Image (tube, rainbow, N blue to C red; front, side, top):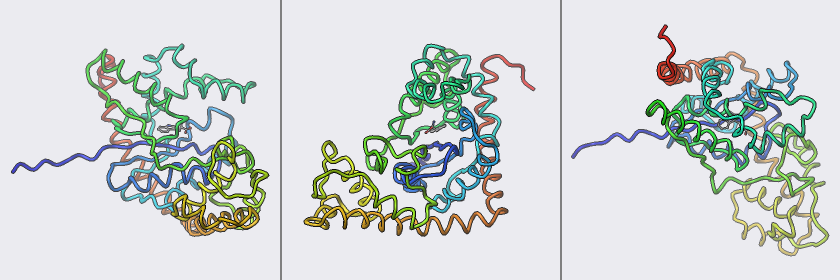
Length: 334
Ligand code: TRP
């Protein structure tokens, strides 16, 4: 019988080091990445070049990029199984981004809802970088012939644009890029703000947001203050009980219990019992992650080894795609 070696599908994703990692980034993204690392060939990138599309403090950005890597590892991403690297270490991202920008319409970029939102938030600093950010993201994805892009719903439009750019380029110059697909895991818990459960947990709202590196005291305080409603029942009802539903989602994700189990556990008990219980579950979930991140952060040589090796590997793959692109558009070979 003929044996066929199935090539693993390739995955690329990234998180901006524009803030500390949150419980939302863990439950919605990183936890899923950990589950994907055996079945797929994964690249996980710390997208520092995306972060500077809005102002960053240089020292903070530098520190966060490295601590984000330490936290990825502490969450269970194995640098031996995944290619983990810092975007600015692989210049091919910027190079491909320039080329792709010449195959992207101004009108397409103007329609990006994230651009519209961010240019309102940063009305005093609407840069060309903020505008062309989706082109850089397309370059990230296409450089590695990515099959699947695990992202949140808010990034779907950017992945669609990436596909359009790839298709256009392939149409003009014959097959060059794999057409990627957004990979939005059904299971990924969408964690909402503790202070405003109608909106996503966001690092720009520190009180409603739990950070992976928060101390147990901070975590407990934030959960005890979480916004609920004026009823008493611990029941999942997204429309009428957004706060309680969010806490239940977090509790289930932290403990592995089902929604039904959680509701039964707290039946007849008030929010005064429920809220600290969720806090404690999160404290226990994050305790080993925080401890391990702190340990890894002490080992600068190890971390440097991981991101250098990651970048070497990424650069090797990226060079293959970029040379193909340069040849196709008509640049003279070096
Ligand atoms: N734009 C993404 C975000 O803000 C981050 C990102 C940059 C990304 N490049 C990527 C995600 C490539 C997936 C693939 O969430």
